[in-house]
Length: 158
Ligand code: MG
Picture 1: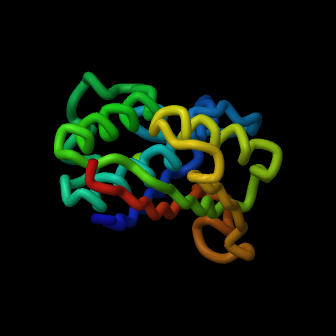
Picture 2: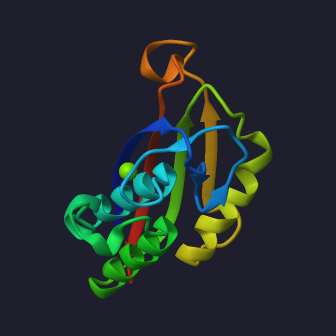
């Protein structure tokens, strides 16, 4: 059986933080604020996977009140979410991500981001898609206050 999940995340930009998306350190004057490494791409993908398997959300699996997840590598959280699905008999089949931000341009980083997610989830080439777009200058994203990420994941019963 094929199941589909959706994930969303947003984080605000902050000084003195690295910008990490899908585990890739992306050159930019600001990073994202958050309890973990604030990897909004990893977080949206985790929620899409958990949603597809009806296993709750990232906040219940990795509470931001838990010091264990302080500055956590979110790609490790993605691997733990993958293991959680596997324990319930699900495996990821495909992931599609849209990152919405004004700056920086992600074009040069998209293939590395997709490969990093594929490696964690054990997916072959062409099974993970990373897309990026601006918000046409509108709202909090347009003002450069933060970014948002949407993800859809397909999972199959093992
Ligand atoms: Mg988040």
